[in-house]
Length: 241
Ligand SMILES: [Mn+2]
Image (cartoon, rainbow, N blue to C red; front, side, top):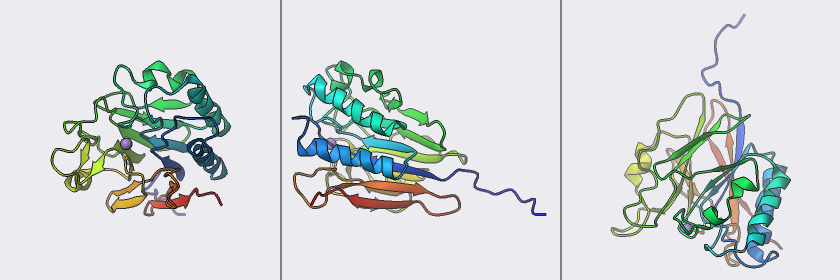
């Protein structure tokens, strides 16, 4: 009889990672259609969680109809949604997220609202997500500062909205040496609208925007966490033909 205890006790999990949705205009604009496609993908892949890594909204004056529309879209999915703010929807006093709190409209919404970091262990999955709420898009804001250590029983995800290897003086910088020091399974980045893999260990990706002003590299990322395996991340095009 094999009495060995598997070293990796985590359950397999799937995460959909998006960012930079920039919702702002009409209810049937291309940004809205692309966001619906992200939700469709989360449903199709039976994702355990959806992570929005900043700039869900384009600005702080979006109409309440759009916020309600987002909540209705998320209700189609009905799983846990983790929301990080970005520089277009920073969490300062006049933030769209303070005027219209999505937590009041969607019960499975986990808002990263702490400037020093919010950590969520998501229900019915071993995914854990940490990030820092941006109050001001400034050189002083370091999205990865004081990230927690990984826990062996979790898929440790870090969410950050900022610029990787920014020149001195740029806002919300993320440096390679910071990524190297992270103890995490996956780093979900937002801010740059074109998808790219920016770092291998831990695996760190910009998802890119779901609607990138007509650019053919519009899409989002599906991340599969498999015990005893490398994290798999697949970029999915959301371009409509
Ligand atoms: Mn941004």
